[in-house]
Amino acid sequence: AVSLFCVLIFFIWIGDAGTLFSFMVGEDGTGGDLASAWPINPGHLRFHLSAAVMGTVLAAVVFVVTVHTVPLLASGKASLVEAIVASVRAVFRSPMAHAAWALILATGIFACLLVPPLLLVSLPVLAYGGHALHLEVFPTS
Image 1 (cartoon, rainbow, N blue to C red):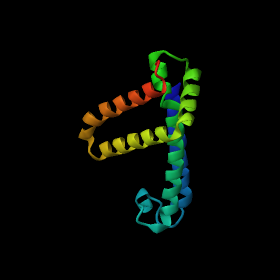
Image 2 (cartoon, rainbow, N blue to C red):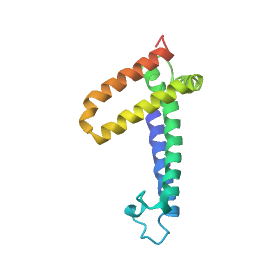
Image 3 (cartoon, rainbow, N blue to C red):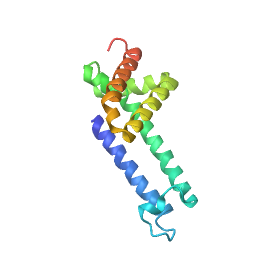
Image 4 (cartoon, helix red, strand yellow):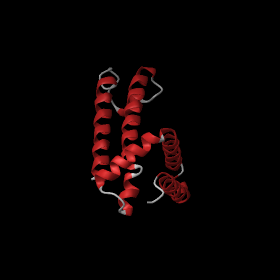
């Protein structure tokens, strides 16, 4: 159910990006192809900012719902609804710590996109950090 939720949010994001592209880039007379949306064109800055804001909001929703839900479900300590509620409450109890962790995760993953062999080192380190954060928030899990 959690993975289906993530897929649904992904489809919402892709649909929103397509809609934004068609309204903001596709009808400006430049041909409407993907290359015409390159950030160098100042006329398309509004498209990139809107897409970034929407992507950030949707990524935050997915993070809030899944950051502690997955470990709680994997350990069998909570049912699906209990795990989601606990995850959302934990994030809202300490939003700055979770925001810092989300920023670290995003930075690590984007760095790995630029240099894929870094995945061999960064994924285990990020997984250990996520587990440590989860144990800090839920010490009995």
